[in-house]
Image (cartoon, rainbow, N blue to C red; front, side):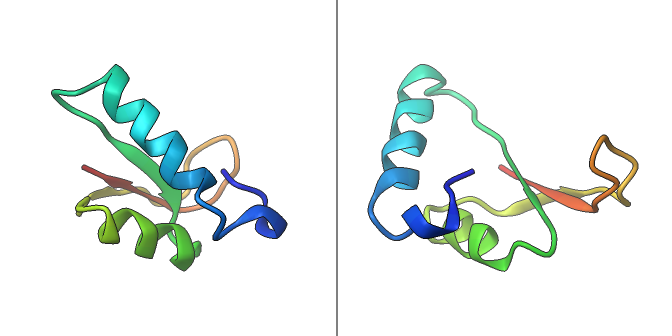
Length: 67
C-alpha cells in the first residue's frame, strides 16, 4: 500500500518493478475491491482480476487478486 498522500509519485511502480524482478515468472497482487485506484493501477500495469473474496479475511473486507 502506498499512503494516499504519497500516491502518483512513482512509488507504487518502483515497488511493483522490484517485485517483478524478485518474481519474474509469476506475480499476484491483492487489493480491496473498493480500492478502485489500486485496481486501475494493477490493470494499467497489465494485471487482470483473477479471483475475488467475500471478505473472510483479517480485515473483513472483500478483495480481489490480480495476476
